[in-house]
Length: 348
Image (cartoon, rainbow, N blue to C red):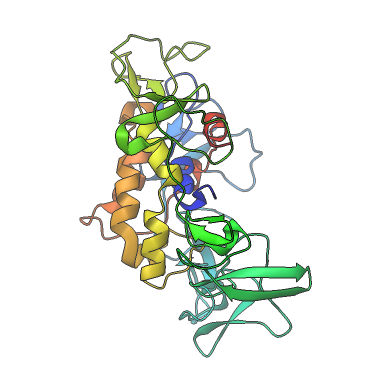
């Protein structure tokens, strides 16, 4: 069975890591830089290009989609790049949201460098083919995966549904396993089962999670005090120490973590809505964002972090993508792309 890389992406994406000490939260126009603090909410530290990396900058608001920009300033919110539009004006533009056969206006709309925007459709360039290293492949259609016999002999093949014949788990849709050459659902493990093997997972719907290679029942931890400036983590796994009240709190529960990793809800939604799983999944223009946003936001909302612990960054990202009262719906900013070691311990 395959790990759900799509929803693991969200766990990784929204499990932000901050310094062990509480951050000094800065406002727009505050001086920032080495040991000066963290720019809050919707601002980022802009350095003067003439200064060295250890000199100070100033907290500036991110530029939104469509805003004019200067190449090299890196003020465009992540999920957008400073690109030339059709009027030859540099603007922050969404990119990489369209896969093979999907609508586009610019080459940069297409999700890989093997695709070009030809007649307003992302099309494989002459002599190019798909990449076979991963079944989630933007160079194939939503219902296909890339199969290679050699590096130069790759082709898009139909994804197999439950009950259909297969040769590998990668042939099958979502979390389906290839068992006895048939795509089948893998059954979760029960209480006391050995969960040490790769891809085995405990039945999180029954309140079980994997701890020290055994499926055990989850028990809500009691409140404990902690020092957020301690040199080591005084809280349990899945917890962090709050800067506002010096107490341990759960940023995400083990059960929700297991759901994020092993659920195939999002992949099924993508397939049903004829959406491919592109890298820029949170682009406001992607098929996935337009059709499966509810599922994506339910997973995002499973994560919790207090604003005092990250200067409001997570709240900004969540509201930007999930709160309908926000008119700007670009992708999530880059500081969240920090991978926690414990995620991979759990997963692998």
